[in-house]
Length: 407
Image (cartoon, rainbow, N blue to C red; front, side, top):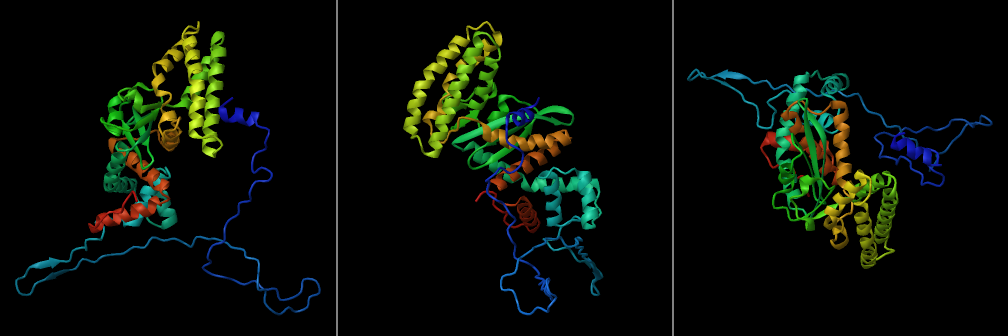
C-alpha cells in the first residue's frame, strides 16, 4: 500500500470539504457586457409586470472569444535611384522580429513548454487548432532556443543571489540528458531559487551553485557532497532524520526501542517549534527544552551503535558523525530544521521529468533549468511568467533595458 492509500485508510474523514469549512465562491468580475433579464408577466396570475428591480441577482458567464493570431506583413520595397542607378531596399525597423513570430507568440510557446510542461508536438497542434497559426516542431525548438538565450542573464543573477544568501536549502534528484544519467540540482533561499542540470552529483556542483566561499548556513540532508562546508554552517534535515529513526525502529530487537524513542524526541522538538511559531513558547524557552532533549538523543544514538542490527548501528554512527550539524537551527535565527523548501521546489522538476524522460541535449537542459528558475522566482513574487517573458523578448528586439527579475 502506497503512502497516499495508507493515509486515506487511516483517516476517518470523507473526501472533499469538511463540515463547517469556509465557503469558497467565484468572485464577480467587472462585466464587459450586461444583459438585463426582466420578467414580463406574473408567474402566478399572468398579469403584466412593470417597474425595475434595484438589486437583481447577478449571474456571470465567462467565455473566451474566438482567437486568431494577427498577421502583420511588412512589404520591403526596393526603389532605383534615377540619378546614380543604385537600388535601395527598405529595411525592417529595429523592433520588428527577424523571424516569423512576435514576442507574445514566442513567449506563449516558451511558457507552454517551459512552465506547463506541454510537449512541443502538442504545442504545435495547439497553435494551429486554437490560434490558426501553422507551426513546425522545428519552429517550437527554435523559439525555445531564442528565449533561453534571452533569459540566461536572469539565471546567472539568481545564482549570484543564492551564493550571497544567509541560508540556503540545496537538494538534488536524478535526471536524464541524452539518454544518460544526470542530476537536477536546486538551491532555495529567501531571495531566489535556482535550478541547474549537471551530469554529476559530485561536490564540485554544490560548490558551483553555492560558491566555494559560501558563508551562509546550508540546510540539507547528510549527503557527503556538502561535507566541504564547515559543520558550524550546516543544518541536517530533521525530516530525513525522522525517516532514519523509523528505519532504526524497523530493524527490530533492541534497535526498535531506540528508534521509537528517537522518533518520540524528534516529534517533541517539532511540537516545541510549532509553539514558537504560534507564540505560545518563547525562543529562549524552546532552547531550554532542546538542552534537556539533546543529551538523551546523543545517548540513544551511542547505544544504537552497539546494536546487533548492522543497518541500525550504521545509521546511528552516521548521525553521530554529523552531530554538530543537528542543532544549528536552535542557535541561529532564520534556519529551519528541515529541507522541505528544496524538496517542494524539486517536485516541479520531478513532475517535468516523468512524462518527458528528461532532456535530449545540453541545449534542452539549459532551457529547462532557466525556465524552472524563472518560474519559481516569479511565482514567489506573484508575477506572471508569460508577461515577464513578453517583456524580456520585446526588450531584446528593441535593444532596450530588460525587465528586472527581482524587485
